Image 1 (cartoon, rainbow, N blue to C red):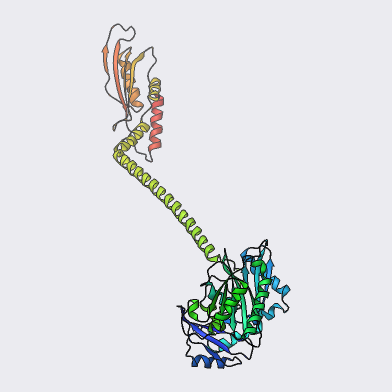
Image 2: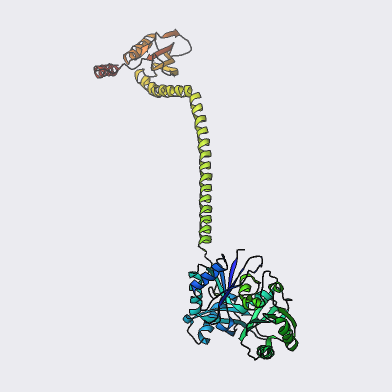
Length: 487
């Protein structure tokens, strides 16, 4: 931890500003002071003379320059406490809030109380502005501005027994600051603080006046002291003499402190140092468990959590999930389509192989189809023969066969039958030849047992292929039809 400059702000314009440097190990340097009134130039000169290089600065304002009020509040959550205290400050402060700097300390509620309690501390806003301006002009980095009695309570807290209530009396010359520090379930808490200026012609009279002031404070807070005082701490000059006398009258164990070592610190000390500078040193390096005041940065309602980053991350995560899910779905669809394409390609390749393997059959089928288209209908030819042949009283057919076309003929006819004479068979041959048939010589034979039809014949004829189309084709066809009609 870097060194910290602890400044005890003067009670009035006639008093000097005193300070000391404290490091993270609890070592307290030599004290220094500036002449009154406090100015930035005077502070610079004092820092240079004391060879102070620390920049981080805490300022302890004396109790006499602050106003403290105890506020009894409803039982509200910690987050609502700053707003509620601010409302109370606006109603109970004599000066407008814009003329004050304030902060508060949560304190344990009184015995039997149902609500909460807080100590409201205010200082003039002009005083805070003066402190900020002076330290800034002197080149210091002001970290906090608190109250001296709270700093003293932080120093004592680390050395106290940790139970009951402790009275802390900090002496600076003739002035004292009285602070009550209670140890409870929530840890050490400052429950109240007062400033006093005991007067007397000598030390004895001053001590009697101090005792009266302490008694008045304890009586006013008797509700918080059901078990009395556990210890009485005396910080400052002659505390080894007056602290035991206070403990004897008020109760508790006396703990006089006239050197830093008695507070767990080290470094050179004068007899007055713990009393005059204890508050400032406590704010710099005291027990952090004791809540402190900071008029520079008073307690406020916690800022709403900025969820923009988290919302952005959630949105980005959701978008990534959606995009990832969409990509996965598309990838699966693509994979499925690729599988289907592969199956179809396999089928196409198989079909192509099948077609290629059966291409000769297709050629044959085409030839057969063409051949079938060109085949002469047997019924048509039979009807045509029936028109050419004479009546059954002269000739009849026993069998008739029409063969399919060949390269030399459109059809072949074979007929077996019986006729009344060989001449009739020859006449039939001539009629068929006239109708366009190519007639082979007919075989005939004489048979018996066929009364009226003694001649058996076997007739074979072919229809030649159709001639190629030509200009004279219609004329020749007409002549052929005329010849057939004359038969």
